[in-house]
Image 1: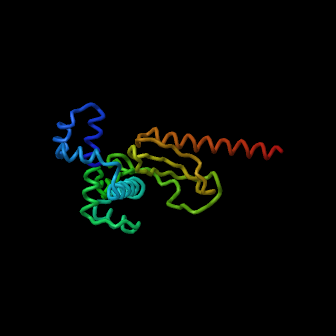
Image 2 (image 1 turned 90 degrees about the horizontal axis):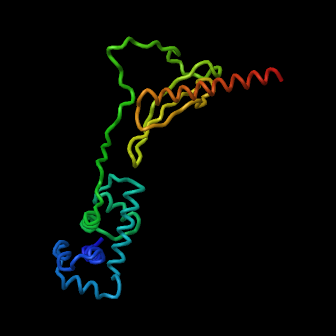
Image 3 (image 1 turned 45 degrees about the vertical axis):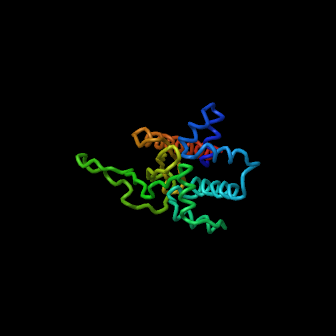
Amino acid sequence: MSRYHWVNARKAEGFEVRAACKLAGVSPSAYYDFESRPGPSEAERYEAEVLNEIWDLHHHLDDTYGSPRMTTALRDRGYAVNHKRVERIMADNGIYARDGRRKKLRTTIPDVSAPPLPDLVGRDFAVGEPRLRSCGDITYVPTDEGWLFMASVLDLGSRRLIGFSLGDNMRTGLVGSAMAAALNDYLISIQQAGVASID
């Protein structure tokens, strides 16, 4: 949004034009000259198009792009822009690059005071008979609303995902729900096998 459009928005809200111009850092005469124009100029239309493309790149491609990388991306899309113009447009519209070095989360934090747990599968993850061995894991996905965690249980024999659970934390309930879903899948498969043998 340009400064003149910002003054326009404040005027529509009932603010005094002179006060809005002072806050925006433009003179009232320049604002009234802008307001008297029949419509946006070719340069303003082009800048609005560039701004729309910047929003698209920032939101859908990579929100870690600062003005130098954003300039390169815009040029790749056919826009004739330099880094100073892109930097100004981004600053005027509050578009800032996020830190690309996202904090890594630890999904496995061992309790050094607890006794070691036995490795029941002996590090053997090869395919074998279904419903005999399973393993689990926790992973995480960054979303617009924060981290989303998924606990999963995989049947090593069939390579099927037999249980999973999603949540916004890594508390015991997340893993418990995934294991309960896996157990339910196991019980259903036993029932189906029993019906098949009767038939």
